[in-house]
Image 1 (cartoon, rainbow, N blue to C red):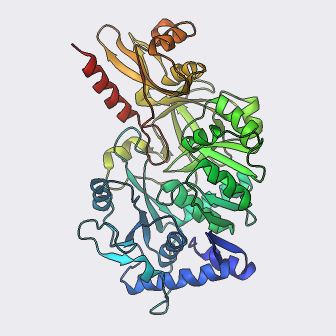
Image 2: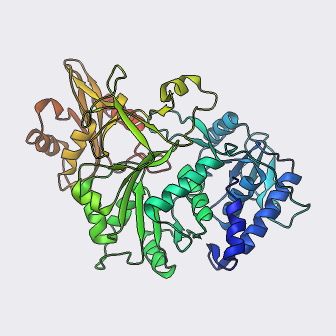
Image 3: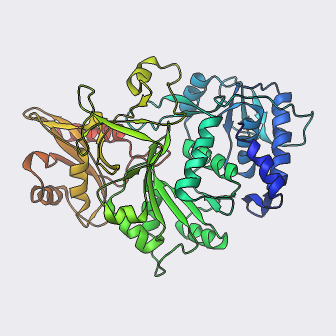
Length: 488
């Protein structure tokens, strides 16, 4: 059940098929299998036993990918740490996960007194023979974190069995296979990209390490590298849609462009299919569960207000405030159940009790699901806005503001009001000059009076977490500071 066993199968069946392309360096599956064996043996020689957590602070590279597979083969639990994080955040991750050692490049920043294993040594020739451990299906593979858009990220474990299940989903619903060539645009230290790379190795595909630094470089790399699969965050999509080009589609070689992490505005889906590729997919899921909702190009045309459809094999239910199931189409707290979902947050019984109940996972989202399984996202459960007892959802305000031709992005949320309890506040980025008063009037003409934002703040860029999700806690801090400056 070890996820790295797939490398041996591919090395046997397609030994010369490229597994990794990193610049001019090409590593075949036969070569990758041997490199992973050697690195796994070196981990064992360094005292890493099955179940030990191993931290990684590595740049995107072939060695980073080799270490993913070597840690899996040795039965270690990988903790990828983004080098861009401040030291205090790295220390928090280390304190929570308690890794045995840190794999890093020479000269990397140390984290406390955590022992450092130089990646050049671990990925070098084996100093002893590798002894393959026997692992159960539920043996942990990754210690990961929730997205952290509404608070402190929570840690949880992913197993080898969960990774196999994710590979099956990607093969079945997106048709990914050994023939695909994937450009790893998202940084490899992020949960989503770690999973994606392991899934594609499981399927025998080719992973191309991304060294592009601009949209123009990306466009050229996709064409030159014969890339067939791109997986992006909404932030990536925004940048690419802003790229000036007379060529349409911009990515004719793509078989799948998948965007996920946060629901998209329908106008962005339309632009993506027109300008980038007709093979444009949207997915929604969580770091805890992987993707559970998929929108195909046909779904986007037929159900423009839906994020997508709950995929086969995933159960979903919507509950009212008392925990009773609601009929199709009603809005409530959404829960999911599926094979090999995590069952707890590490050392966090309070959030475990909130999110994991009776075999169901509740991410804290409000949604409606119709009789055909289409999923209509409404926002976070703690984001619902109550104006004198009348409740509405931030997404209603966001969708209206996105209709204005000068608005590029928007995030809405409730804000305390002395007379009305709460009113909407909105933060926007723009693509043309516009003032807050004009945007307020635009809303007045299109939504009920109590949904009109009482505060509209225009900013140059949205604060985002590493996966590109807008961090509303930071937006609220920004608005609080702005209102404090305006107070007499």
